[in-house]
Length: 235
Image: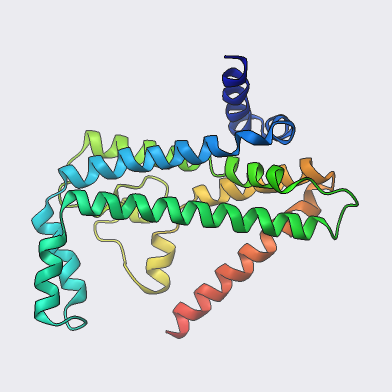
């Protein structure tokens, strides 16, 4: 019970007062799996609700329409038969588990490597894993917001991204799906919250200044985002 209360308090602190929260997480890094389970379960609940209530004929038509000319008619027919709520839920859940695990692992590895150049005694890999995992906690707010929007309004013919309350796509009648406009419309501002948590957590873990932590955390993100936008503009 005490451990459960400690983990709960750490989660509340990460969202309300991150510095003390990350101090606690640094001392008890074995709780790294808790935020990942919470995000995965929230994802499962959200996608189950969405795919069980969306107009599947409309969704199937939209999906196949985007593949016209890319697949032969027989492949399109087979795909139309495979587009069912259960298949889509499994696909979404698998994507979330794989994407979340890979992202957390890469962030933890990057922070550990770069910290070795900045401080004499760097935290353990498990501690970095806990920091990267707990920094994903704001994702829960996105699922809650989209779930509430789905519960109080018609959504049977809305794409999932149009239910978001933390991206521009959620406020457009038809969000762009490609190019720079699509990237910006579908960009989730919760990412900025997660980056801010990483900056604070890195400063707490290493003792470096917030400014140095910001440069360390944001540099690869700015580089990758700029490269992505340049690629979309060139494409």
